[in-house]
Image (cartoon, rainbow over all chains, first blue to last red; front, side, top):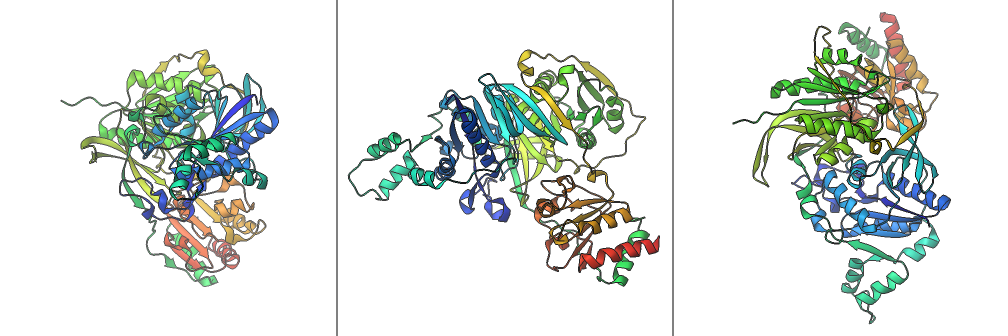
Length: 298
Length: 340
């Protein structure tokens, strides 16, 4: 366990089938209205971390920032082989743009302590910005290697990685600690049944408290006892507020976000009324003639 | 009293001295924004032995080219480029800074925005100057950059404003801004800048680099024949190649056809592929997801061929052919050959 690899993941709304209703009037996302999934490229980042664990020995810590139910993606990470999880959750983080997000995550890295590598998926499918990775690297003062396809070698001094560039690839070396963003270039391992059995009870402090409030714990144990019991079994998902990670309030959430959404429109792409063309030799011939006449063709 | 505002800057992306199309498109857009604001259009030309690019930049509308050359700036890596640009920002305080939303631009711009604590909007498809009322904070801003981008997988279009310190930074998708005709008579000013690089910025080393130009340049093509899942097989794409060859065009594809392995990703049009605006776009067997339409809806003429009369592609088409591409495309080839 010589290296510590911290993977940041995001629970995202599935953007394939949604409408403008999913946005609040303030222009932020109404996540509750949408099915939540593990951001695809973050699974690639997790897979790369687990490969490093297999090859070189590493502790894989998975972190996310989000609402309390974002703990779901953390459990899904445990099922795949992560060793430890961190949930950064606080109403004060809400409404963050990429700058405020990268600041909050940098506070989280410092809280975790000695970290050799931070891995992120290249981008999340809700925003598609790909900004948080490089911004986090800068906040930490670390070098970055973006669009990583595979790690060629890892030593205590440096990492050698292959990454995509436009029209090809590069192999780069960087000293540690470093931040990597990872693209869809590996096959994330499935969740392991044995690990699901062991980790399905992993919970955050808030989830333990909620379970008690819902009276799922009819026995006599206290919340603190249950938390200690989870901790002893290494099943406690660390839960941090903004104060826990020493984040300055002015730099997180909406307050820490320079970009403001002016307005949001649902996409309506129209080309006007299409002219119907018969799928017959005569119809097609007439169309081609028209396109030649108006100099679109020829 | 009005405060003098800074200029419009464009980060010029080049590979072996060849300027990326998106950078020239941004020079044209930058020129338009700068004229609206009454400021200058200025380029950051960074690399090594690239002075010959300057004249091209003047011809597209740059008033000033800042030339920053150093062997450590080739090939591109994010850290030294970010250092050079940050130093320039601190010295000259530009109002707007435009990057192409390329792999380089999307790696570099956030590194700079983070250090400058500036807002950054990714993958813009339009830019305008307008005033902004921040009702929540009761502040009004004059002549801000409206940063317009698709979000949520292309399902919505958001207009975003950067309310903090300048520069207002964005990355812009390739192919969405119009390229104006260059004027070779235009002149500009060359300003050489010596980069202040230290060991700190050169810790990342490129030890191997393999690249080749794309096999197809869809963004320059005037006619595109694109196929989707309805084409049915890799073999059947030959029909599309035949039509493209007959008409003098290139072959494009939807994501579904690329994912099926029928054609290389270089041919993909749409949100995760390239954005095109050719004279003629023929969509064959493409249902027309919102992501695909976002990449081709600006084409001057669109012909859609689909067996499903309710396919969304027809909503952006100028000519709708409800029929089987296997019979329609050979008819098109025949008809064109007969007319010429």
